[in-house]
Length: 400
Image (cartoon, rainbow, N blue to C red; front, side, top):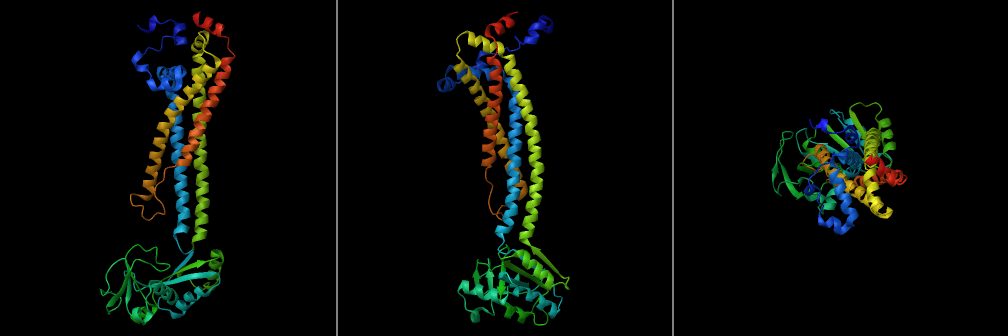
């Protein structure tokens, strides 16, 4: 019944489509105080035409949210890759098994004499389930010197890291003797700083005394080299006849990870661009259509004395209000999604990471600038078309 009372021409014009209570479009006093009558009209226009601008706002919110979240995600992945090299004090390591073969053991040890090595640790464990380690004679002497200890006083005792007290006794299933703790500290030697659990460091002399019959089966050698790639090649050449070892060049791993991240980034940013282009097309069509439908309104405002300067200011303020509203929701949702991704990657315990969560400031700034630039560009395009219209002709067509 209601549709039958509306004429086709009124339906096309949508001249009776806006029926809203005056209280619903009442603007805050601060709007008029800050921006004048043009700002008040702009604010009321957005509230009055809420449905028309909703599509634009949603498109901007979705685009901004996705851009901020994915950009932040890429930043987190890149940071994780870079942190792997920054956190590690060594850039090459080798885990190996001698299986009681002294010749094989000596060959592994000989890798520490290669060129380009400026520091190393021969990390040996008494057993798979023990936390008692030796770090090589050279590294051990350097370590106790940093702690201010005398070798003769500490060589038959253990240095406890992170737990215990001086005088405590340590027992192991690997050997029958009881090991006494001679010093307690939180400082770790080179190559052991990645171990988070409490452990005991002993001298190589004591280690060999506790295991006199065979070299340690569990051994990891940590190297810091001035040329990790050359060191890797030299070790592989020296151990060409051996198979019971695993060698990893951390610098090479970081490069490979960085290349993989770059490839993933190309696809992710390609996805962002596609989504943004869809959003831009949607925004352009919505804004230009809305501006076209409001031609009679603009013509009426001009006819009652609104100057070109005031008209342009009104449109710009509409742009600002719409952009601020879109960015408010878009940045909040984007930052929330970014934080959710961070928690998914690192969990609630981030003590092992080199840095905590940080707000994606750069993506937010880029999003803000892009949104205002885009909306302003589209609005200026629409204003240019409106300026070409004849005010009297537009009002006359509306009254036909």
